[in-house]
Length: 249
Figure 1 (cartoon, helix red, strand yellow):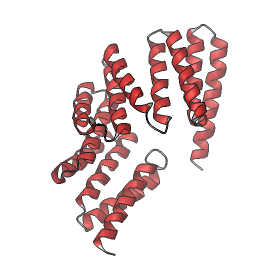
Figure 2 (cartoon, rainbow, N blue to C red; figure 1 turned 180 degrees about the horizontal axis):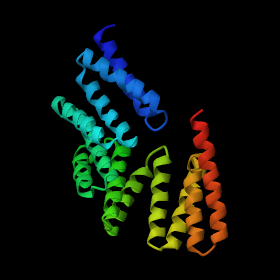
Figure 3 (cartoon, one colour; figure 1 turned 135 degrees about the horizontal axis):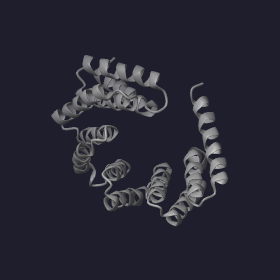
Figure 4 (cartoon, rainbow, N blue to C red; figure 1 turned 30 degrees about the vertical axis):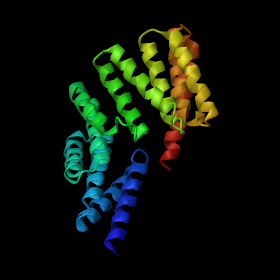
């Protein structure tokens, strides 16, 4: 197989790793391991860098935070050396996400601001929206409500322009949940209604049902309708476990 075909194979393996990273851990480890091995064999440093970044992402999502640091920094370092701006910025984003997992908000904001440098031109609006969304989460951990809302609103504004609406629905539901935490139930109601309409029109209601039912239940609880809230929470739990079980078949 020629070098170019081997590089293309590494690219496909990396894409498969990304696609399965929250779906099937066994496939992720298989494809990721093959990508690292082949990229090293043919000295394809771009593919190797991306593979190590994805390895780090999978590790922190699986709760292995120490090795995640090592591999995310390795992916970052390799990408910086070859001038791959996209994976450099993406690696900074994921290092920020890892810091959020550790509730190290100063580190998270440091990495997110580094990532912003590579995506602020909106060449990749979906990724830029993720940076803003997670900066909002970091400020939320610091109880800085104004900054939390500002960055989440920035993420929502970008996501309204994206063709697929899953990211927008997720951000709106997060904003509704924040409003509930701040005892602004009427705002949460309005935001949830917006999210439901978008989910229905985009044929993405089923994917968002658990979160929508959960937020509805919290709103009812805040309004004093404990029985209604429990019914919705039970429905949300049933939906989650049904889909969780089928996903593992």
